[in-house]
Each structure stands twice: as C-alpha cells, then as structure tokens.
Image (cartoon, rainbow, N blue to C red; front, side, top):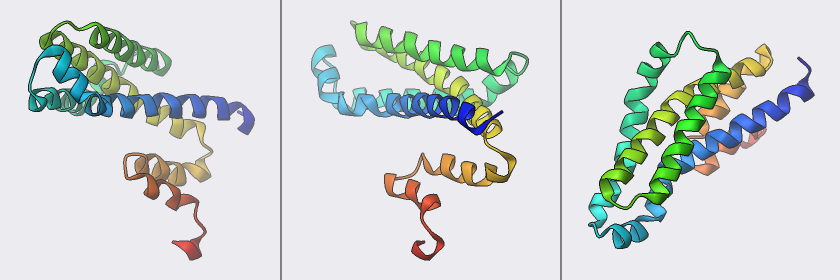
Length: 157
C-alpha cells in the first residue's frame, strides 16, 4: 500500500480516536448544564465520566475476546455506532438514569473502537516506523505538550 493511500485512513482513525477521548470528557464541560437540566448534584453528574471510563476499561478486553472473529472494519463501525447511539440518547435524556445508560453505550463503543483503531493504525504504518507510531499513540493520552516530543530533534529532548 502506497504511503499516500494510508494517510486518509490514518487521519480518519485519528479523528475518530479524538472523538472517543473528547466523549469521555465532554460531560465535564457540560456539568453545570447537566445539573441544572436534570436537577442533580454536581457530584452526581461527575459520575458520568466514571461510568464511561469504567465501561471502557473493563469492556475493552471483553470486547476483544467476544469480537475477535469479526473483521476490524465491522468492529470499528460497531464501536462508532454505539458511541453515536449513546450520544444521541444522552442529548435527549430526560432523566439521569437515561443519561447513565447512554454513557454505558458510549463507553462500550469506545471499548470496541479504541483498541481496534490502534491495531489498524499500527498495521497501516510501515514496519520500520511502528515503534515511533506506538510512542505517538500512547502520548495521545498524555498532556498535550508530551505529544510533540516524538517529533522533536534529539537535541531538544
């Protein structure tokens, strides 16, 4: 596969992965709106991040086992579809339990999508650049300034 034909796929995966991370934290910025709209305490709305991340963390290894026989494209689409369904349900949620259920769907979608996207992206990168790709992918979950480190010249590190 030529380098140019890999780039759109890598960019699409990166954009979708950004959506996964943004979805995890979006409720933090919306906390006051959620507490006002649903009439709950701020600590209760903070639980929405915990629900998402716990389902993500616990669901990823289980999803990998359960979905190991389907192709990766289907797994990516399933994960994104669950995240989309959860997002729509969350936006329309009239009560906190519905919003928690929506976050469960989003977390499950992320648990399916994120590991699969990492595998697909690693396979799109030439073998001699996979270590650098892995370092960059891992740094995406670090503070923003750490993401530039793999691209700095050795003298600046």
